[in-house]
Amino acid sequence: MKEHFARIIASIGEDLERPGLADTPERAAKAMQYLTRGYQQNIDEVINGALFPSDSSEMILVENIELYSLCEHHLLPFIGKAHVAYIPTGKVLGLSKIARIVDMFARRLQIQEQLTLQIAETLQQVTEATGVGVIIEAKHMCMMMRGVEKQDSMMKTSAMLGSFRNNPSTRSEFLSLLR
Image (tube, rainbow, N blue to C red):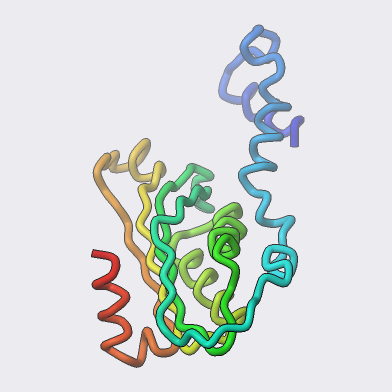
C-alpha cells in the first residue's frame, strides 16, 4: 500500500523527496489500515460472549455513538453519530458491544444507507431482539469539500426491523426518546 500512496502523491505533481513528504506514503498506508480495520474484525470477536440473560423486555437505547467512516465513492470521511435501540427477548448485549458493532461496520468503505442496515441486521441476529431501530446522522466530506460544497448538510438514515417497523407505538417511543 505504501508504494501505491507514493505513486498517487507523485502523480499529483509532488516531490516525494521533500522533507514533509519523505515518510508520507508509509504514514498514509498505516492510516488507511487503521481507518479500515473493520475488515479484520468479525462479529464473534466483537461480541466476545457478552450476551447476558435478562428478564428485560423494554427498549434499550444507546444514543450518540460517534462514528467515523470512509465514503466508498470518494474515499473521503463521513462523520456522525448512531442511535441504536432494541427490545430484548431473554438476553441483553454488553453495552460497549453496541458501540463496537457500529465501529466494526463504520471502519470499512461504506455508504451510510448500508452502514445503517448492517448495524440493525447484525444486532437483530446477535440478540434475537423482537425489534431493532438504528438512526445515523452524519456529515459527508465528499459533499462538503468537493462537488456542491454544502457545509451544513446532514444526512439521516434509519433502519427499523421487527417491532420498530411493524408497531407504530414502538417506533414512536424510539423517536420520542431521541428528541
